[in-house]
Image (tube, rainbow, N blue to C red; front, side):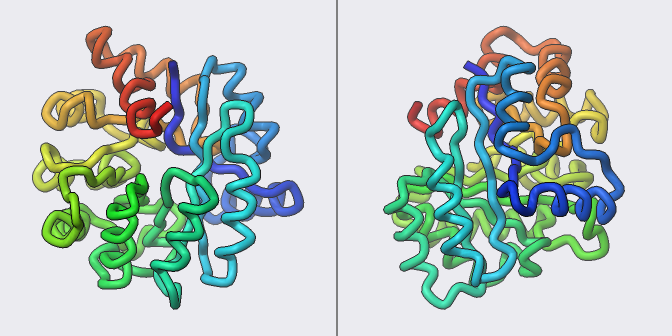
Length: 270
């Protein structure tokens, strides 16, 4: 089973404009059209069984429409979706409980797009309660290429967040927090120094082609292949190409199987 743990799609009415805006903003080229149909076609071409869609609430007023859309696609044709919440929510517990009631398995936080540091008390409260509810929590970590000037989730702040959750969650050992982009995009030296070996997962989204293979292999070996998740950041990376990149790393059969799907299967209870 192969599971891409980090993908993005957009509702049809805004997909083309959103893709064009983000391409210009970040100076990158999308590898698909950002539509649900495009993701499914990409999955078929690559041989991927499931893709996890990670929506981002960029303002509190988007909460209901975004999560209703997430619920409408979740569990259909190999598509799974997380929910989203904004740190400026006036009722974060109630909103997290609504996401739970929709049957979504996790939430996505994007500190750069939401313009709040991950060690901010608002995020700490949301993440801790999400962990208590049994959610998976995926967080954009490191530099965002479209917003490079201020990093809202650098490794040192991610570490403080993890320590807070460890101290305040009801069952901290059961926390299932995922730091995207191999723990912190373009901040991998600090990831190795501060985060490797901690109780956290790393996903591989938008990593291949941006990190030295030796460093990536070192992170995988020292952190443990059981806490690494195959992820592409589709449509910004090609699912087919990134899958091939994992298979070229020279991992053991067990490590490769864990990263490509077994770890995600366990997290998602598939």
